[in-house]
Amino acid sequence: MVKQQILNCDIVDLLHDGRGVGRIKGKAYFVEGALPGESVEFQVSNEKRNYAEGRVRSISVASEHRVEPDCKHFSRCGGCSLQHLEHQKQIEFKKNQVLNSFERANVKPESLRTPLSGSQWGYRRRARLAVQRTRDGQFIIGFRNSGSRRIEPITECLVLDKPLAGLLAVLPQWLKLLPVDIAIFEIELVSADNAIAIALEASRRLKDDELTVIAKSIQSLSEKSLQLWWKVGKNGQFRRLDEGAEQLYLKLSGNLKFCFEPGQFIQVNGDINTKMVDQMLQLVSPTSSGVAVDLFCGAGNLSLPLTKQFDQVIGVEGLDSLVAGAAKNALDNEITNAQFFIADLTQKNSLNQIKKIPKSLDLVVLDPPRSGALDVMPWITKSGAKQVIYISCHPSTMARDAKYLLDAGYKIKDLGVLDMFPHTAHVEAMALFEK
Image (cartoon, rainbow, N blue to C red):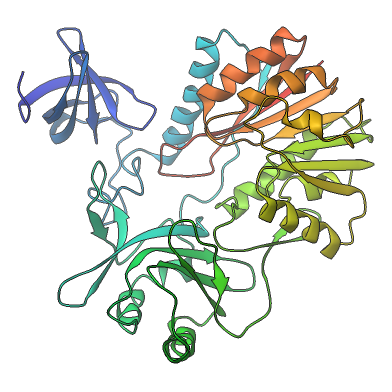
């Protein structure tokens, strides 16, 4: 079969990234825009020996769970991939992704929790936008097209929270105030409880006279308080350029205040983050009051709430800026029973260097990146922790890591899905392991 060929097939499953799966003469075809139960005509875009990829051209038999996407950019924008599937079915798909990953690893949970879900629209409080300046000086901002580097210009985004969505229409005109020799590579928008941050990654710094014009004009973009942040190059660090001094902050469970800066990791869905923290605290044994260790702790999203229940909380993170942020958040919240340490958690013996971690632990919490926590699993299994709570954004690596705990005598007591990213194929899950 040749590239760009048009074929027909029945769709029998969904791939982990939300594409439909069909078979022709035993060969798998991954079809963007197709759903299980559908018969589709599609155009082949990429052919390999064992599989091929394509995109729907027409649907002769539609799924009963197909819906009309609300966003006018859906068919081209790469931000969402599942708006054409009923929201409840999206959650079911994500639940099956997690269960299938555990089944392949021969891991079986004792019980399943009801998925944590919230509003399917206006939930995203952080976004990174691609930027391009055209030859005539206009700016295009948006998300990359699915499967390409081309930017899809967007004038609305239904998953962004309203203050951020409102900036989409005015940012291109505001960017024209920038000197023509400055290239903008990316814009990060963040909606905190007290302000919005517009953070630009640029090719050079602003001169004083240029900064005066840009900083003065920024407040006209929104009714909400705005902050301007700037960095030069991918490896630079964001610096605040406007004259304000108040830090960006979010409220966590227990009336805690979580301060952060653009570029630092935060959970983008505030509602689900609150429910996630509450569920974590519910899973903790009511008799636990000793020592909890939070690995990949960031600036304290999970560590800070844990201090309400444990005598001592120790957070570990690989970036010194996040460790400093976590320590400051503890200080600002008058928390005295938390300590934070730097360690490269991609190195097997890194945690052995932290002498202040006690020999006896009640709880280990970890929320690693997509690559999982393979290098610290041996340490966790030897830590003696009575409970381990693993929060994951990649079910396959979570299931892989879970086998270490099972081999060490732990049982997986609870497993549940978090609908952190509605209308996308991203899957979040939480599992509780007990000795």
